[in-house]
Amino acid sequence: MTEDGIRCDGRRVDQLRNISIKVGVLKNANGSAYIEFGKNKILAGVFGPRDVHPKHMADQDTGILRCRYHMSPFSVTERKNPAPSRREIEISKVLKEALQPALILKDFPRTVVDVFVEVLQADGGSRCAALDAAAVALADAGIPMRDMVSACAAGKVADRIVLDVNNEEDQEGQADMPVAIMPNMGKVTLMQLDGILTPEEYKTCLQTAIAGCRTVYEVQRRALVEKYFESGAH
Amino acid sequence: MTSAILDKLRTDKMLDLLKQGRRLDGRALEEMRPLEIETGVIPKANGSARVRLGNTEVITGVKVQPDKPFPDLGDKGILICTAEILPLADPHVEPGPPNEDVIELARVVDRGIRETEMIDLHQLVLVENKSVVGIFIDSSVIDSAGNLFDACSYASVAAVLSSTIPKYEIKDDAPTLVEGVTSKPPVKTLPVSVTMARIGDYIIVDPTKDEEACMDARITITTNSQGNICALQKGGENGFTVEQLLKCSELALSVGTKIRKRFEQLM
Image (cartoon, rainbow over the protein chains, first blue to last red):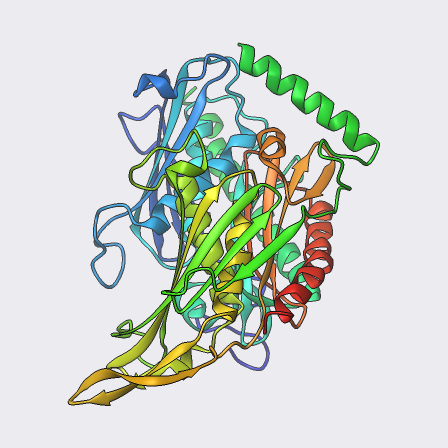
């Protein structure tokens, strides 16, 4: 990073990478979205509410949510084994828990909403980008939601708190903190941290990430407005 | 339907008590259950510990053995931390591959020890890029009564502190054990994880299994001896406000300091 805080990819410390989201990119899914978040390229597809298989997973009081985060073998420099890794299973779990508070599934007992996320190309912050796409895909599928879920990471690179750590920065970075919020309800629904922060830096990092989430929210909102209002599709 | 009603009753009862600043087992909101740490319980391991946190019980063993370094980390020894919930620990656990809860448990415990840089892995190199010493920290939950994150984390830290590292030398191009020479592990800092649950607007420390069943969300924060926040994992099916997250970080530091004193006694 340069003296005046310009980062290896030319961004300022408080600047996100370029984000574009397309809604309704898959024909078979009930809802879908494609996000490009910097060099991340991620597809999300939503199915349901539909019958639960295996049946014993069904809940007679509410619909349930399942989430699968998966990276394509060609998504990273070294080929990734296509079998789900422990990292992917953990991320699937935290993504599910990040989306769950936003969904209202009480009206669909004994059903499941499946969210499938495929990382076609990964470049740091893929879990946040995946979550951003998944939340938009859920809205596209018409699943009742209390709020959007918007995610973005902040971190510590070269002793400074920066927004949206990319892959190159993450390799050398001192800390990485992915965060997701429900922007209108003001609740943090995903949060993790790797790396060492003082209590003061922790606070700044959290606030920086949340500010990033709010910017992401605008992009998500615009993507949905574009499909449902401006194109006159509905 | 029965279970949904019971869950509701239990949550209502719990919230009633929390309003009065109390919990089902009589603890204060920010109080940990009694913590017992016993080390050296498995003499065949290089280090071991048995930890009881209330009715939760974990046994951790440390094994030290020569290994090849990871391709991109040739200047560091290997650290691997696992955790499993044995079928004898809980009527709902069945033998078989780990589910997502167990994988999260193992990864959160690993992250706490790795990200605080508890062990100076640079000191475990025999020949750079070729041969290193690996430290394997394996935790088994043998009785499951809530907050497995902290129980496994404390047992892992205690097992490492109690361990002795055998000496290896390169002979004929292969790492060979030097009999009778051991050293203390290269410990730089003491990680302490503190797991908290949010029930309604209340934050409680060290949730029991009943409290975990009622909680809205969970957070595990690991701090180091210098008072920094080094690893964090939010879990559970709801969220936290920013104020709650800041409160949790303060609690992790203050409660963590007390637990860290227990580890210092083991050094």
